[in-house]
Amino acid sequence: MTLLRVDALTVAFGARKVVEDVSFTLDRGETLALVGESGSGKSLTALSVLGLLPPGGAASGAVVLDGQAVIGAPAAAMRRLRGGTAGMVFQEPMTSLNPLARIGAQIAEAITLHRPLSGAMLRARVVALLEEVGFADAADRLDAFPHQLSGGQRQRVMIAAALANDPPLLIADEPTTALDVTIQAQILKLLAAEKARRGLALLLISHDLAIVRRFADRVAVMRHGRIVEAGTVAAVFGMPQHSYTCELLAAEPRGRPEPVAEGAELLCTAEDVKVHFPIRRGVLRRTIGHVKAVDGVSLSVRAGETVALVGESGSGKSTMGYALAALQDSDGRIAFRGEPIPCVDRARMRRLRAEMQIVFQDPFGSLSPRMSVGDIIAEGLAVHARGESRDKRAARVAEALREVGLPADIGERFPHEFSGGQRQRIAIARAIVLRPRFLVLDEPTSALDMSVQAQIVELLRRLQRDHALGYLFISHDLRVVRALAHRVIVLKRGLVVEEGPADAVFDRPVHPYTQALMAAAFSLEADESGAVSQ
Image (cartoon, rainbow, N blue to C red):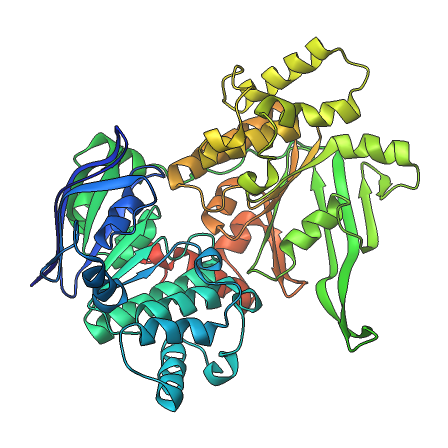
């Protein structure tokens, strides 16, 4: 039985059409995936189902949800549909949940908008929902604020709120983006279980084709606001008809890094590095213990080599990277090209900083919105190349832009004018303009489309080949790690649990934690390879 029908949906912002002539149906108990790159119109199509378009957006065509026309529906009807007929799980729970309200109160609000529950009955319902989505200590978590939960726990709260009123339709907009692989597997397993238990229809929006292949019944491929191909998952993935679908399927990062040259220079070494954060309590803020974010980690990186740090959130990956880049105080011994880090001599430390740079996870947050692209890239030159003329610096900025595959004439534009992949290229240009020897890459492909991920991987490979760069690559995406890394170090709670050549760690993991990471990362491809079961 058809639960959702979309006919000739068009979404426009003024004269600009961002979704055009989109049509599909969704039956009860079925999963339909909308796939495509960022900007393809996937999320706007999903938001149109509940009349949640951003200000300035106007929808035309027909959207019928459980017999109720959505476009042009009165406010009272839309209140019944939102949460009552369809629940929605948004992409980023930290921005979707109210940071000032406790999670129990937020789930309770979703219930009381549709049901006359209060007191003990309301509390029992909230606890039951949290238990259903995997909180073992649900009653104790009611008073927690969103920032006190992990990313996976916040996503579980979002799912609990979306399912609070037993809607027949669940809309999940990139529900696992930027989550660790093990947490991704848990969230996907939870969604599948809830769908089976409740007989839900699921509208899944995703750019991760491995997830779609594993969990969807049908798929619609969107590009530039239009559906270019649709059908069963087996048909679309097995025999794609449209060239764009073929491009998406071929976009996963592939290949292996080039071998490290014999006798390559040792760039960075770390021995027994520790980063412990004090836990303070009481009025006098006395230290009662320590969080051991990094607890005795040793590693080395040679010119032309990529060493990957992998592990779940909280394992100490980024903290270790910041310590190597002298952005985090640490104990132990860190040296760059034989010189200790940090140096007592400030001038020498400034010179070393020019040779070791960092690319952060979120380019939108790490690039100043008030500075032009040219000024952002040139900022480091003002510190490390003071003797150069303005024209020489401008030439180096243009050269850095060309190296990362961007036009040299974009210097007057601002970060918000670019896509996520383009912003990451700008962040890489900012780092390489100083001609460093060593880069810390902190989740540089997180939350990017798979096609853009593949482009960034190829860019990093080329830069490493051309300049003999050493990389410390921090990531939870093991498919990207496999395509880039020569060696892999697995961290858990600040400790190294396994390390070795990438092929050995991926093909023959020894530690149970590493085995769990590999199973979570590659189980989505089990249907094709048969190598891993979920």
